[in-house]
Image 1 (cartoon, rainbow, N blue to C red):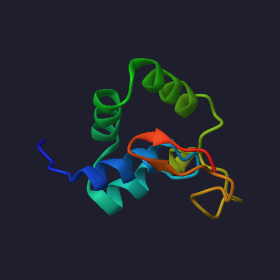
Image 2 (cartoon, rainbow, N blue to C red):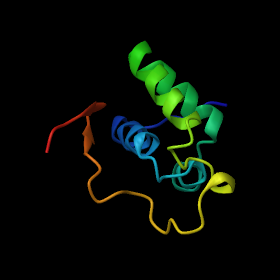
Image 3 (cartoon, rainbow, N blue to C red):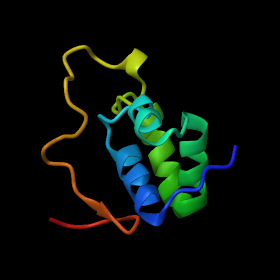
Length: 93
């Protein structure tokens, strides 16, 4: 599957992937990128250590990346305290 994304779209997908409350289904709906492709993008874009931290977090239970595993009381995607991610780097407030 070959999907051409602009650098801006890639940055936004990475930002959404880091957000605990943004499910993979939201990324697929907005960008047409399924979970496997998001993982591939993250693997190819992030440093190896950052990718490992992200994968560990997604599978830790802290993240609500899958709608089926999501608690029903969560009604928004992004925490108000979530840091902004620009140019694939987390910036300080």
